[in-house]
Amino acid sequence: MHRMRPSRDPVTPSPIGARLIVEEVLYDAERPVVFTTRSIAGQLLLAYAAGDTPDGSWFVLAACTQRTINGLQSGHISVHDALTSSWMWLAHEDLTGALAGVWPVTREEVPEEHLPAPGTPLYPEHEAALVTRAIGDEVSLGKIPASVVAFVADATRKAVKTLLDYRLSKSSEGRPTEEHRALYDLKIQRFAFSSFEVSFAPPDEDLFGNVELQQVAENLEAGLRWAVASTGEPLVATGGDEERLAILRASLLLTPPSGGPISEVEVSGQWISRGKVRLTRTARPRVYAEIRRLATERVVKIVGRVGQVDRDNLSFILRDTSDERDRKAIFPEDLLDDVLQALVDAGLVEVAGVERSGRLYIAAIAPADKR
Image (cartoon, rainbow, N blue to C red):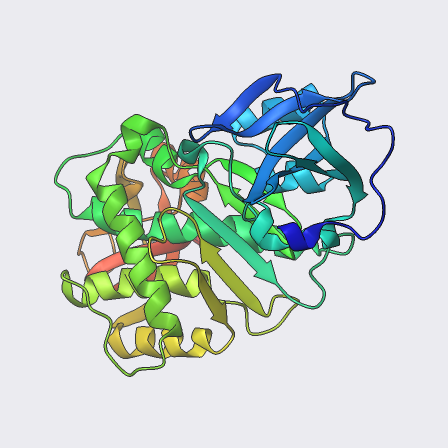
């Protein structure tokens, strides 16, 4: 850090005063690491202990407001963003605790190793479960297409839901719809415009201990790492081909689309325990080819009657079909109102979807043509 001493003279008189006075400690590790202080004019400043040298300590100071502090403490703002979003000072404290100099600096003058890593929250418990980042030449602040925002949010939610649906289908116990949704409909914790990045908070503590959710996190990481691996090793899954397919479909959702502004997708967070995974467009055909190799599915259109609906597990029994064979149909949440209306109407409906591994997955439902 001593090499970061600016060649220009420090500001005189010191805008901080003779000493750096700690007003509120926000995070400490045997000494204050992130804290607030004030300028001699009374302006609230955020301070970060950037490093020690034989002749003292260095601190990065940034203008802030109480709203910034609240955002840090709630996990909605990262420490890096709070420090670099406004003008900055570099302060040197000598071995006696007196300020030896204060310099105005730009973000580029402070090396990355002397700032907290981008995305790092103030408290460890606020670390994002998943962080999905879309990268591309056209993905930058001020010109991010709406399709990029939709992709990041929808792909992450649907990937978690795909794996969770597989896990819950293996359980003999029903699960209330709201509790199920709370596990995959992760709350957005932070946005960042390094390309376009969304941090998703983990579910509430009582849900985070859920064994099924931990398995989902392990499956997701395994699938993403397989998608970017250069070896020809098969995807390992204890549940056989059905589990492999669930993992692959979830991974496919997070691979960059074949066309459009997104060229790479980076996934990190506490659920990706071995460090971030970066997927390029080459991952998509690899995952898709493996899905096609494993999948035994066919597109179907079937006419029948909705005879029984399980709202908790988003399924119904399709009765009175032309081959007189009842089928259990699984449908997405956005079709729930249509399915319930079909149950009330008690008439024939036509459903479209795929039959896969003995299950019927519905993509659309409508009243049957009476002609």
